[in-house]
Image (cartoon, rainbow, N blue to C red; front, side, top):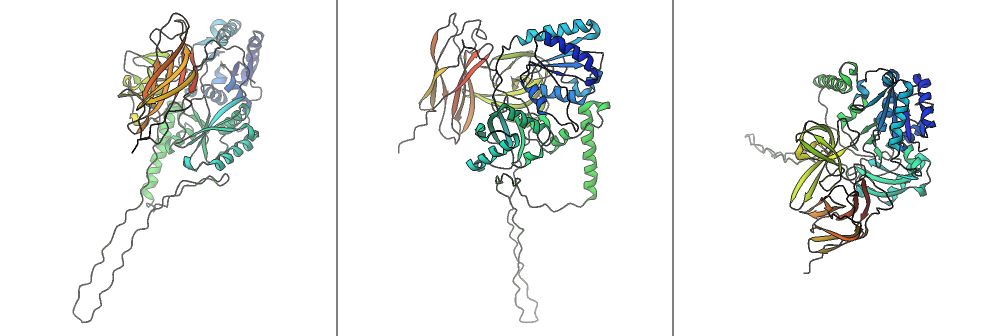
Amino acid sequence: MNSQVFTSYSRRDTETVDHIVGEMKEAGISVWIDREGIDAGDQWRVQIVEAIETSKAFVLMLSANSAASDNVRREIDLAQDPPRPIFALKLDPVKLPPAIRYQLAGLQMIEVEKLGLEKAAARLIDDLSEYLKKFPPAPEEPNRQVELVIQGIDISQLDEAKKKQLLDFVAQLTSANPSQLKIEKVTAGSVHVFINMPAAAAYQLKTFALNKDKRFKQPGIVALRLVGSRNYVNIASGKMTPMAAVGPLMSLWLKMPALFSSVLGVTGGKLLTIAAVLAVAAGIGLAVPKPTAPAVETSLPPTINIPAASTLTSEPAPTSTGTPTPVNTPTNTPTETPTVTITPTATLTATPVYTTLKGVVIADQISCRYGPGEPYLYEFGLIRGNEIEFQGRMEIRSGDSTSTWLYGLPRGYQDSCWVNARSIQLDGELSSLAPDYYPDKVPPLHPFRHPNFPPPTNVSADRQGDQVTIYWSGYTLRPGDQEDKGRPIYLVEAWTCQGGKLVFTPLGYVMDSSVVEPIDAALSVRDEAGCSETSHARVFLAHKDGYAGPVDVPVWPPYPTPTP
């Protein structure tokens, strides 16, 4: 498919929209426009999902009709993940409803009322053509990687047989050839399974998830996302969410209509709805006797037969039996009182539920970066008072000091980024944000591919005690290709053992030069013994326009076994 531009509009504006789209096509812009609409019952079609996923830009034909369209609102939501620019052509004067006001905040719109239809269309075409110059013609991606989130099992239970069952399930659901499916990696938390598959199968899976397809319940899949996307599709609600799994209140939030949105906006309407539900629940709680707690069981639907984690069963309360003392005479004899022994019952440990938090910049100026740490490329700047909605956090180690970086979307911007927590005032507890958010829960580092700027080569590592040195071959960058003088031209990301746990350290390699010349580079990091997880690292070239790589350290030098 791979059209350059996806066009979102209301069918009531078809005549005007067709005229503008015709001019766009005459100007050489490849346009995808839906002629069928979302099916009855608000079911997404895979063609729409694929068209948005593969487009470079999103054109919104904004009118009173499209602003009131739930389908247009959903297309705008989908276009934000991964984020792509929205070009809005305002066909007639319209006040933005709460459902799309946030997504379009700060957007510069081309207004037909001010320019006239022909001049407005020409301005749109000029803006699009200038933007699309950044994307030379490229073949369609044959494969995509999809992250599936499975709850209810431990990662140790996902053996080869269960992996095959999971791949067979995906193949059956998407009609893909099983030989084209490959599990690349599995991570813990809930079980996250990353599967390479044909792009068409990936778009089908996302479409099924948006449509809340109940077949995902069979293997216990609760969320998924295409790698490169910022948000997951929560399958129970069909909504986009920054968290892989949500708690009961967040689930209620995603599923419920905003009953009072016309008065308070979507968020205010949902809050009032939740308050009403909780008030009713509290009233019922006062009238209904407290039930006896049932035994706790954890299981998965039987189709794929992935076993559940161990069941925790509370021990039955002890009973005490007293032995009566024989009475031989009519004289009253004291009867021994039996001793009751209290046996402690099993305690359930709550799984932490994380949420998003709003924050505000409290420094005069800060850098929003592509990754969690100072060595990463600058994405854009923020100033005091800018508001950000945060999804996760990352603790990084630099020598003997640690710092926390936060990942979020600044208000009025289309791209998320990382900021140092010391410059942010959060509206809540830092611990409410999901930890270890990098790299698996965010899009890959901004990629840069150019034949003149290949990734590093000859990557290796060796050890001297607790010190591991990472080596690679590369070249210097001219000032015009480097982010700035004194900024890194290579980035090393290392996960190493320090203090008994795996910690994350990003390192920048700085070398200023006026000419391009080959170099052999090295950086060192501390790596101690005592961790169950394996240390690892990878290396990127850091061009001012993005990253080439990564290249993994192929063999991590083991910690020497002490001699007795």
